[in-house]
Length: 463
Picture (cartoon, rainbow, N blue to C red):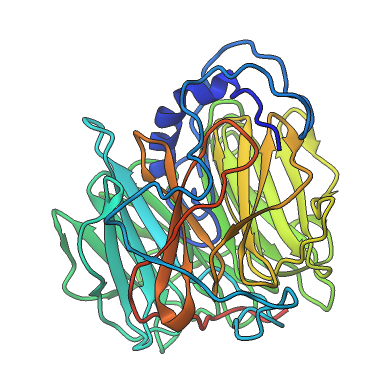
């Protein structure tokens, strides 16, 4: 597939990805995360410049405007970041031993990220639930593992969610055996000694995002399928206080995703939540808080599609992207802007049929590029790009062997390097490194094993 010129917004890729690192990943997305951080992807404001739109995928390339080309296919971009590994060949296109086969894998990994503004070196905390039901953490710094996996203790029934609300701080959340939502904080170079309960009776994993420095928002689904929310701002504490939560209504029939953004094109701060509705053929429903009105939408609405699993929301400057897997295994997408409202849903199945069986992980770089990832029935990672308003017509196979949804994070800001993580065979974490580059495709890279004994089991709200 032909490369196209990187739009002017991409010339400041390192600064865009630096912003992305504060847009942490908690559930489905690489934003991550989301403007101010969270579970979906996000991006900073684009730089100005006039560049004509690209032609559709497969047309002749336009002269590139950036000097850095994507890493050549098959060439590893890192050494000392995991141990090179390989995976079995799948016959018939279906990985019979994958826990995702015949099911739907939600996100089970979490990431919290911040960046040192002096040298742009990113620190990424990767979280997973171990076979012992404790939460485990490992730190990536400057594109390399800083240490080995460390247990944070506890006994949990849900996968974790995580966020960084400022430089030097990371928070991780999970649901205990009692149904209470618990959290632990890293700051001043050390983790809290004990887990802290914020109460509630959750039937879903938490979803979290940060609206601005020092702020976090956490949402869960209760046993009645209603959505509950708490928020915390440094210096003010939790609101509501104690074990109380605000009711956000419902019912919903899936795990949640949440995205926070500071949108200069949309009246300031914005929070978007998504879930599936209830019933046998649920669609995606959403709810929004906007600083211009300082209120939440009254009802869950804006539904579309006949979907399964759990949906993904990506929020950035002035735009929200909604992504979900259909009952037919295809990816469906729609977007929203204040100017144009909601677009019509679009089938992104591509010209070559690809059946997907995991939640989507996605991130946006500026206003012009959106990269999405999901796992196919062969347990391999699939990738699709939207570039300057045009979706690629073919899913790219990036390899790997997944027993979970993928988790995409930016692990080396100066180099614009992205790593995609997952739970691989034997409960070991796996990853591969990619450069965003200027074109539609990223190219196949070496996969690495990052050790660990993690569970691929998950908690999920039934339809």
